[in-house]
Amino acid sequence: MANPLDTDAGSELFGSYEAEFKLVQADLTQKLDQIPELSGEPRKSAISAAERALEEADELLGQMRLEKQNIPSSTRPKINQRFRNFETDVDSYKRKLASLASDRAALFGSRYTDDPSKASPSDLQLEQRQQLLSGTDRLDRSTQRLRSSQALANETEAIGAGTLADLHAQRERIAHTGQILYESEGYVDRSVKTLRGMARRMATNRVITIAIITVLVILIFAVIYSKFR
Image (cartoon, rainbow, N blue to C red; front, side, top):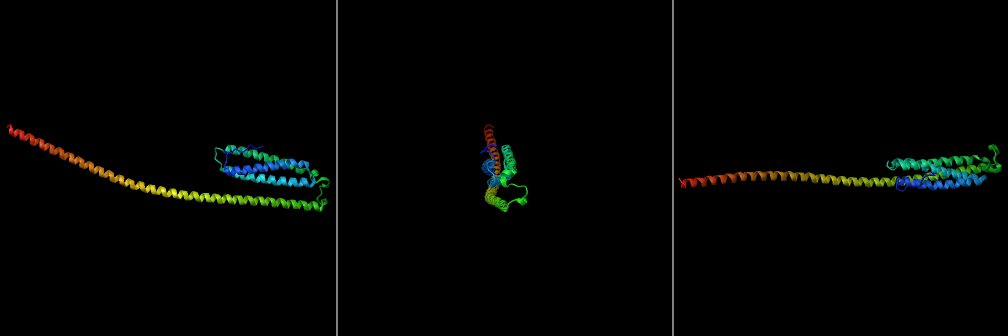
């Protein structure tokens, strides 16, 4: 049998398919266990019910096969192993059901005959009715799955629209931040130019100050020299 569901592996959608598969699997196992104890019409009804459950299990396997491609590669090995176990289980159920359905003597009881022309009208009508009911059940299940898929698509579309809106808002914020950075760069350039002008003025003032001091020192020496001459 398949391994229990790992709650930390796989996507939420795959997990929902897997949980639904396990319910169908349990129901199918119960039906297959009951068939050997039945004969005649009850056996035919039980086989038809098991066939419908097996078809539903096949449909769920198809859904899981598609969904497991969206699962991160880090957890995909676990998912693949569980999926292979499910496939093995379904193959086993198919073989068991085929074996039970091939026992036509148990299926039809004392009325069994290999010649369809000898079958009673009531048997033919019952078989047609069961086939019609089986087709109706399959159509109902397919309709429910289509509705679920449509709801999921609508939800995904809404999430996508919200994501696009968030991305647009982030783009606007990034553009605004870029504009602020551009303006700040202009302020920095002007500040650098101002500092360079101040540095040039300071250098000029220093040269002027040194020149004045030099002239004063020369005058002082000239005065002293004139007194001691």
